[in-house]
Image (cartoon, rainbow, N blue to C red; front, side, top):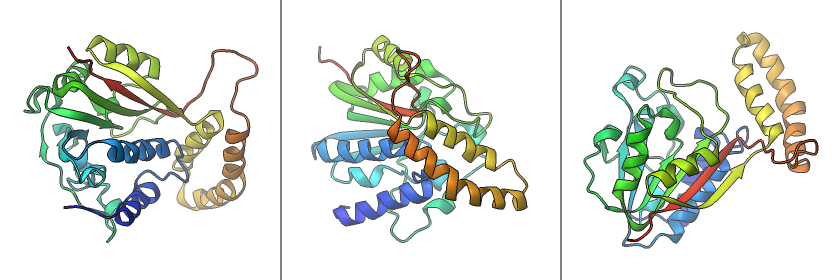
Length: 262
């Protein structure tokens, strides 16, 4: 199945507005931008493997539609402990313009069943912190990637504890670079997204949920009309720490790494 650019644009708009809430969580714009770029730059005869958690969305891949021109394989890495939560985010993708691409299969990261050196591109979008066995995850990324192939990872640096108990760690981009190199993946491009004021905004978004509903509605009105617009403006205006060198405050990051040819 192939899709027009306008159909993909509408799908991306649903992801932005309903799934990733980029108007409130702008660091997820990095994920959407990079996925679209990779889809456009990856050749039509390439094999793309995406490691996701499609169970949350009714067994659907969020990024699959963008890779309609390639051979696309998606692995739902949701652990058994997530079964009782089920597809609790499915309502976010109920839209006539959401392109429904089912997950190819569900498998643990320790045993995906994929052939070695299968993929020209491996995608790991917003998944790493939900995997208990980090050694298995990074080794699997490297194992299934062809020599010369690429691995793309997007991760937050700031998140609340969520999907408890399946939330295990937060990486810095530099820590993840080290682990990638250890398994034979060479980072070639690292992007940071967000700043200290959008980090404050993220914490506000979480804190609002702790208020009783009546008070929450009152404070939300103030926050989104007055405070959040100011935070977004400051995040664009003040991008460098003027008190300390060698300091940044991203809210998310992406790494594109390559498996060197022998």
